[in-house]
Image (cartoon, rainbow, N blue to C red):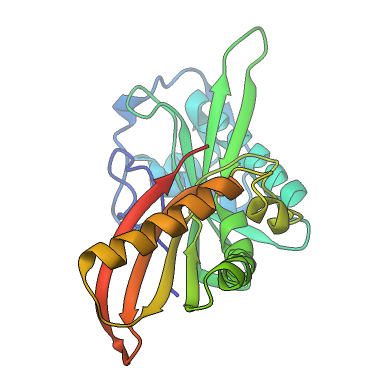
Length: 257
């Protein structure tokens, strides 16, 4: 299933929605303060990443780096450690980067899980300035591994209250911090204890009637979810009970924390 990605557009490196490094697409280094030059021994992954975002790729290959490039590597190391700590059951590779600079207010890393390199995820890294800079990261990988379970639990909840609920489809792409990891208890999301953003479609079977009747059903579902404290964007799709391929009505509402 294609996932909607929340990727920030960099200066020019990344194609929208995919995050792949594009051959021949480079950043203008004038956007950065070059700072002092540093000799650095790079791993293959680090060299590939820096070459993709640098005009002077030959310097990178020689390990002759500007200060901003060294800073990107520090952020890269932090991002990888963050992902390993947050998702110890998975392995990752960073495949794209839009560094923090005068244009971007934070660094965006695009990464893949090594067992599915066709699916791209976003990690946002901010630098809190002080005597010593502090890195703060957020990502959206948790959504991919939790959204199916969330849909199942939402369906069970809704089916008990609305027997004509046919199915539920959920998409979770919001970038979140460390607390949203692989151990996230989805039951606490469904109980309203944990507030998590989501895009959920709820399919309801109804006998053909009128828009007023359909809108009333949507209001009932809205009130039920609001009462449970379940946050997110919900699209209720009313299908014809006599022909469930026929859509009778659709309405979106948002439940806020």
